[in-house]
Structures are given as structure tokens and as C-alpha cells.
Image 1 (cartoon, rainbow, N blue to C red):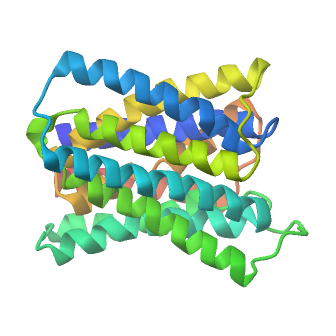
Image 2: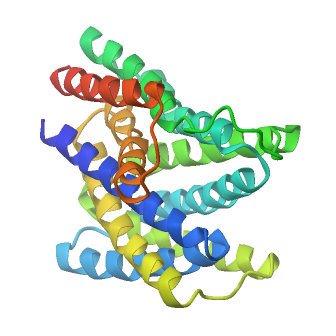
Length: 281
């Protein structure tokens, strides 16, 4: 139950962080938002890692650094896909891969969830798709799901899903150090990507404040994610964490007054059912 609670805390945090970062990205290029949020998270994780302590070993550094690479490229490819293709297609496909990759790897590594948990995983994957659906599916959009967008969608989903797999390999006795090494490598890569794409400029005003908030919330989410993955099966914890779109949609309803489709509402109900089944299983 504790692992499930931590996974849900992580999902809730990721959902809020995505919402805040998304609002900031409406005003400035998303990469410039990440240029603030990632280093902020890096500094906070560094402080927490020193306070908590833990063993700084080769595996902790390696798995953390490699995880950071998947995070950086995942963000880059994801926003590139959203910029060129329809959000109503890109978002659900990416979210499903984020959940499916660690589930597949966990089962391949010998994890065997109970039947109730297996059913819960299936329902959760369906819930991720339904909740992530765009509310305006019938709108005519100039953005098309081209082969390039399809490739970007798939590789970003694989990168984000691989993030769970890689950080799960980090030794538990290292505590928060792998998260710090992940953010260090991710931040360095983001700076390089921003420099190469001529986006090496920090936002100002409200976008800067939102980016700072996203960095703080992302830090909390990452800590909860690591603790959840260490306390549960990879195939179970990752699915619960991948329910983060529910929080994003909920905030859009309350703050932006966006309407929610019938299918998104069904997805939220299914998400609650999946949480209960996975927690029990």
C-alpha cells in the first residue's frame, strides 16, 4: 500500500508539473522552460541527496547518468512530436508506451503480478489512453500524423518508458544519488540541444515563475517515483505512475475550464478502479 501511495504521489506530481510546464510553454518555446526546470530540479535533488546520504557507487552513477540521457531525449522528441503532429494522437500513444515499456521489461525479467494486478494493469493502460485523449477530437487541425511525427512519438514514448527501467536498476542503498546524476546528465544534454537549436535563452516573467514551480514539483515527483519503484514490482509501480494524465486533465477542467469528453470521464473512473486492483494485487 505504501508503494502504491508513493506511485500515485509521483503520478499526481508529474501531472501537475506537466500542466504548469504546458502553460509556460504556451508563452515561450518548451525547450526554454526545460532549461530552467531541469537545473532547478538538479540543485534541489543535490541538496536532498546530501541530506539523505547514501552510497555513491559506480552502478549508482552509471544508471543515473544513462537514465538522464533517456529523460533528455524523451523531452526533446516529445515536444518535437507535439509541435508537428496532432496532440490527440501523439499524447495517448506516448503515454501508453510510457506504461507499456516497463511492464514488458518487468515481466521479461521474471516479475509475476497476481491475476487481480494483471487485470488492473490492463485497465490502467486503457485508462491512460482515455484520459489522455484530446477533448476536441472532431476539430480540423493543420497538424498531421506524418511518418516523422510517428517516429518521434514512438521514440519519445520508448525513452520515457525506458526511464523507469533504468532508474529501477540503480542500487537502493544509493538513495537519491542516482536521481541527481540523472538530472546532471539530462541538464547537460538539454543545454547542448538548446544551443544546437538556437533556443539557449531563459524565459522571463510568468513563464520563468512557472518553470521554477515545475522544477520544484518535478523534484518531489522524482523522489516519490524512485521510492515507489524500489518498494514495488517495476511492472506495477510504473503503471500507477503513468496515470499522471488524470491530474493534468483535472487541472485543465478546474483552472482553464476546459470541457472533458465522455471518454475522458470514463478513463478517470477506470483509473480509480485500476489503482485499487493494482494496490490489492
